Length: 125
Image (tube, rainbow, N blue to C red; front, side, top):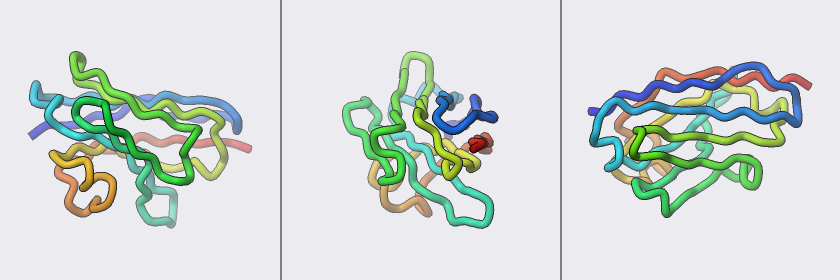
């Protein structure tokens, strides 16, 4: 089973940008749909974005549409989340996720196979 390690979190001012990265451990990485979730302190986990194994299909949560972009590089076993126009309400721990089915990531997170350990993003006002 693939293992996931996120990086790229940090402190940024409102209106700024960050790029999160998620590295997968296995050569089977390219067979997984990938996604990002986030969880703010005291709040429930929230779907952020998902991408199919080929990169041809993407989904975004309503709160990030038009600001965030998910992409992947299967040759490097990497998935990315480019976050622009950041807002204080984007502050959260961001988790990378992998599953054989993109619809699990999009709609059934309790069924998602693999999770990363998370990386903290803090957006100051």
